[in-house]
Amino acid sequence: MTMVHPQGGWIIALSFLAALLLSGIPFPGELAPFRPDWVAMVLIYWCMALPHRVGIGTGWLVGLGLDVIRGALLGQHALALAAVAYLTLQTYRRIRVFPPWRQAFSVLVFLSIQQILIFWINGVIGYPPRDGWYLAPAIGGMVCWPVLFVVLRDVRRHFQVT
Image 1 (cartoon, helix red, strand yellow):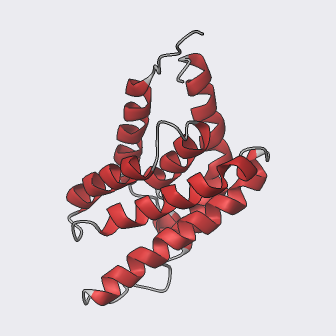
Image 2 (spheres, rainbow, N blue to C red):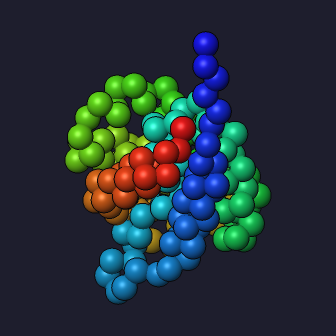
């Protein structure tokens, strides 16, 4: 029996770092509300592709980093990303057999749940919503998902991340 050692952990870490950097880049004009949550989308991809390596704990840790970077309530994004990771891990066997354009609808649901959790937490701590576009990032994520999926899949295959 051969033992397969996981490799490519640095690729996973770099993809999350790139997502954190992308989340800081503003979208132009009227598209600003639709800026996708790149970190959540990268988390969804890795949970689907490598569920034995990336999971709820990863979502929690990356979410804590996102809380620190954005200056949000500590644990707010961590809870939301852990929930997204949990939902992805529960459904990845069904979702990953679909083509990317059909996976995008599941991503829309996951990102919507994430946005609703963050909206709810902000309401509980007394931060009123800035506008009525709190689900717009989920729509932007759905639109960008097929491209992100293909890019991360090709990176995973090229660097043989297991």
